[in-house]
Length: 197
Image 1 (cartoon, rainbow, N blue to C red):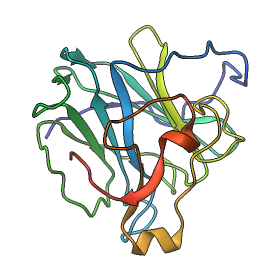
Image 2 (spheres, helix red, strand yellow; image 1 turned 180 degrees about the vertical axis):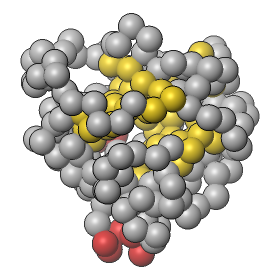
Image 3 (cartoon, rainbow, N blue to C red; image 1 turned 60 degrees about the horizontal axis):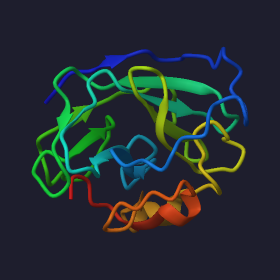
């Protein structure tokens, strides 16, 4: 397993709000492919799956995942470790799966399994969101689970998980093609967890 840098409790000093960040283009390289903010082991039974959707290797070393609260404030960041080079779509190593401290699942593609611990009691907030940013701090992709979380949100928010979806082992997942239309409600749906698959 790989280690990673953490910078917890980062306030959104930039005062990010709708319109202050350039709108990203539909990602043709790396997407946030699947997210679970909770599970059968509670609020910290969580994971984030990144996927290379291109035909070229993508070096995501040093990329940052920002975690947002329901009030659109950055509460944590996760820095991807050096040497995280996602392989082209359709190959082993196309996924990086970041797993929370109480993760209860099994990761199919074990090439990049990266553990993380967030400072908040809820981990990734159920009504929050997250974004992926490159080394130049440009937003590559994002998903929010509430329309109030504008910084990572693309279009309408995805449907948040809840205690019922915990028992069904659900996660917010893109379709089999990992389609990115920049509309979270269209791109993500609650499905059975499949990290690294």
